[in-house]
Length: 249
Length: 316
Ligand SMILES: Nc1ncnc2c1ncn2[C@@H]1O[C@H](COP(=O)(O)OP(=O)(O)OP(=O)(O)O)[C@@H](O)[C@H]1O
Ligand SMILES: [Mg+2]
Image (cartoon, rainbow over all chains, first blue to last red; front, side, top):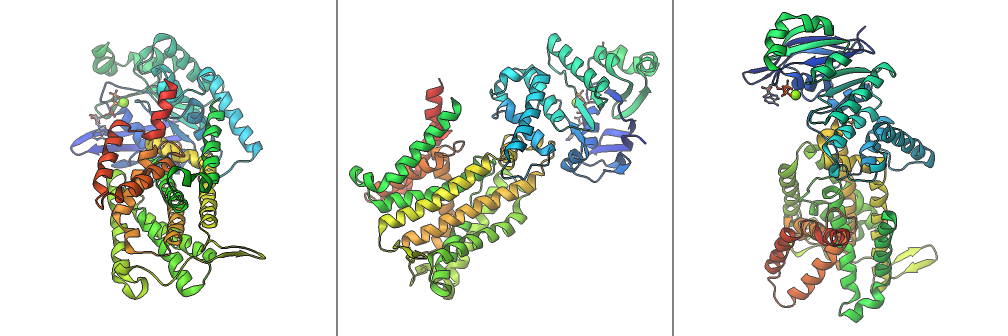
């Protein structure tokens, strides 16, 4: 059974069909890339998977369970975490607090009015791990909104990881990053995938990154599925070359 | 270092509050003026729990303030001549009211939320105005007073001793402040900050935002109704204006004036507001206009409030 399955999902905005009958199934431990030109519907597809809004048609299953009608926070509770293409963090809280909040919600503490010392030590240790993993430890006490774009993108990813998800949806994690930062993020994603066997769906514009990381690739164009397959198959696909790869780069 | 500065503020605040009856006379005030500051500070801090720490503007907190005030007054007048009974009843009435109204409004955001909260406050205002048999209508609820406290062998005459009453109010303030401070430092409190900072991100971290706003609203209203109880005790009187929109507006003004991102800001806002009101209303009955003007200027030039401005000075 697939971890995530989308069955013929569509999303209309008035007369615009942003996502048009897209199906996808992601196996546990798989890294799936979603590519496509600007406005192809990639982010909208993520919004459907993560529960930002419901699909106009189609079904979404997670772990065999129909989650189409579940709200965003219920899907998070099942283990689906996402990042946003445009950074969504808590700008006037410290980096530490940005990570502590998801650590605490993941630990089921969101309505807890006080913490025991032991619990507090646990959550703080977890935050320290995440800081270390992202190299943000020296900036832990800084306000997130004061940091560089690259650091904020890193926080964005670490907040999703702090949820200990079973499935991670990454929407252009390297958008706007410099070479070194991109390299760090790619290494982080590869480690999560290879070492921790985390299941990941990745939207990415940088083709080097996609072909380097992905097990399989889904290509969207104007909302519809253009192709689906291994990186080799996609690279050799004439439709993809014509509509996308050749056209852009 | 940051931790020490936090505590520094708290220590100064408490040192000043605990000694207020001893110094307020020397600077041209009087104990009851100090009591008034502390009473309204509870209300302003309750509004700020929602506004400053959850990012939700209620422009109708007088609804729960008024429910607390009437709940306490009516209980003492008709049910049990005890200040503690009145306090419990008032807070209960305000809290239950907020639970029910909260269910109807938590899906709203921003201006819509603020408008609907005003509307509910005005409903209570008109009901208390019209239901003369119970509330005394426009003349207010009279024929009762706060009662001396008796705790076993100990008794405290908060009715006749202004200083004793001040400390009673300060104890209520302390309980409210401690409750809010503890909550804000807890995981639950951090989910509220998360909602204030970025609702979308909060939702996608697994926080059911509407539910948490409801909880924050109810907690905040519980403290507002506590403020209403002690306000009624301060005056030995309640009238429908306790519910009215301008009363709600005053709370917001106090919260914003002092600095809505800071914990003690609303206390400072309440002090400025009450003192100005005291000085200006002795010059003219139309103190609302100069005060409103002052407020508008304050918000324009110091959008983060007095404390926010002081902090920035120190930082740069
Ligand atoms: N909430 C919305 N309301 C109306 N139209 C929308 C909405 N969200 C997306 N769209 C439209 O749907 C189409 C697909 O947008 P989407 O953001 O999914 O593309 P994308 O593939 O992520 O593009 P990019 O590579 O630029 O991020 C676009 O034409 C966009 O304008
Ligand atoms: Mg996009």
